Length: 523
Image (cartoon, rainbow, N blue to C red):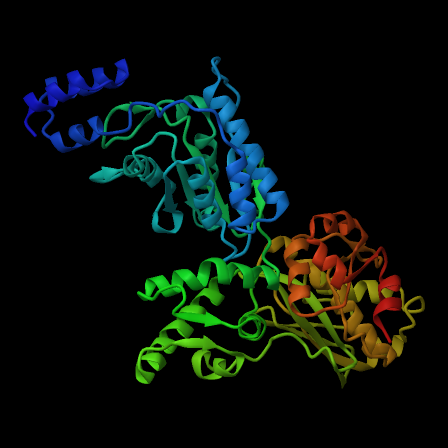
């Protein structure tokens, strides 16, 4: 477009004075990059039509369409209401802005919830995958193209859009202090109101933008970063919720993507439950979605061979359509074994139900510890290992008589202890309670309750310390069919946020001390 046409467009455009002056100056200076000037003129300078905030559709959509947990829905509704009140206020506030943070394991639908929220608000939604950016600075500037944030606004054609910054936890791990600087800049009201993308070269107000960050866990974020976020946790879905979401959303989407009508293929209720229980072990539905699409494809092939009728998927068809079910990683709850304790930890899929296994060998009081991506040696004095495992042995040795453990046991036998590894640093100690139960089970020659699982850290004097990620862990226990859970008394109040179904199916036993836990755990 030639400069004369650009001047005509500039004169007709309803731009703020500072933006109009900046573009006029660029044209006066003979700016050769007319494409960027033209695109700057095409930015959404005019605010959307003012209308009262309708928050009920947001709440209804998240609850009914997305099956979001009530606490997450409440946090989202509060954030959106506060954001709208500030954006539409007559008087400008100079207090820091806040970002909405949706956190939870992979596949629980954090980004989908943001899209649902945007649709209910009648706003466009754009997603910026932070894993695709080399540095935090690419949010604001990139060579030869707009920065990621202004690029999203340009695509959305709205300065009130919902923009999702996906994976802030991984970005914090890669970028370090740059991630904190990014969050500080995004919550600074003065900088948000005057963003100058070098590609466009004009100031643009992004204060009305509804920014959402997503992450698996908030632990990688600094304390100052957390203070800038309104957090909505998505710990995972119950089995019946997964089945409902599959019928309502996943199966119709899979059929539509393969060009099939919604009634071309149906799953009977038992087949869907078998697929969820026997083929997946996740907090969300990402793997379930892949399996359903695989079943649809193979059913399509089978139906074509039969003459075009896909029919009904029953549980007896799953072996042919989805393959052999994976071997479960969880311990066999039917077996009463000494030295075997179920532990609850977390990883990228959410809560995980794993096994702590300890075995005895003649020796000199050494222990081999495996399962943490390494094998480390622990001698009879607790040397050569750090963290929770050293604390466990110290707690047992300091209370041999109280715990009914003989000194001879700790001096004349070697042990190998295999532990499940947690994927977040703050949860690394949560295996302590389960490890202590497994070791004392061997020392007393008594089996561990096979219906029980444990989570919690241990202090050197045997007290049970609170741990993190209680909701994902309890969901994992429920998926595994656990009947009883030992947990720190300091986490008792976290149980209030769990769905009623979990309380109906699991007996929670808060404990303060290792002796209390052993009284419950050992048969």
